[in-house]
Amino acid sequence: MKNKLILFSSIVVFSFVGMRCGTDCARTDCGAAILPAFSFRLTGSTGNDLVGGKNKVYDTANIKIMAKRASSGNVENIRRSFMIIADTNYITGFSVTKDFSVYYLSLNNTITDSLFFSYNTRQTECCDKSFFSLNKINKADLTPPLSLPQNSYPFVK
Image (cartoon, rainbow, N blue to C red; front, side, top):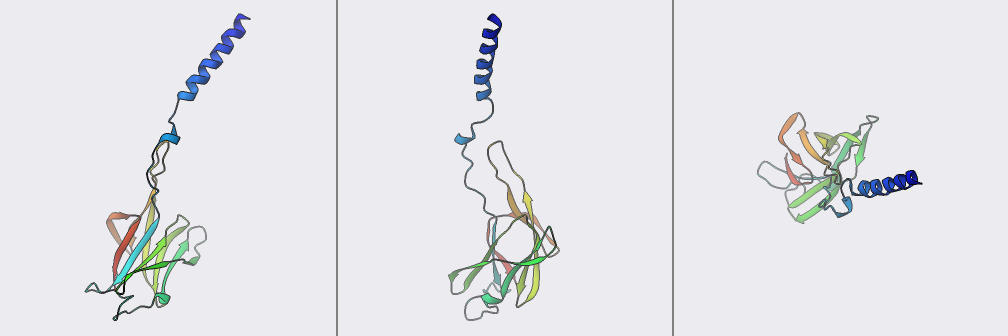
């Protein structure tokens, strides 16, 4: 009987101690999620918008984002969006995922630029603050890389 009482007492004590181990993630504020969004403006050498305004060069229908799927190497069209700030300020945006190894900007059915993103893992016991960064455009490294979300990065054409 004495052995059963000691065993029962040990189980109860270790149960309470075990419940106190670790972090209570329900009470941890991880902040806002980091969105994997990238947006850019197509501008001329003088800073004029090439998609909107009276001197536009490209129509939104002819701006495509394509990406090479990491698992198969297939190049696919990626859904992109346009945000119009004013007549002369068009912003093109798209989401980035780990499913694709490189993204391409296509203007008038011609690929003009390649964009290389990296996934940066930043995790704590309770929070995932991992994020994407733009590391390279064409063959040029960006130093330091641009952390996403990035809004209105200029592409000069």
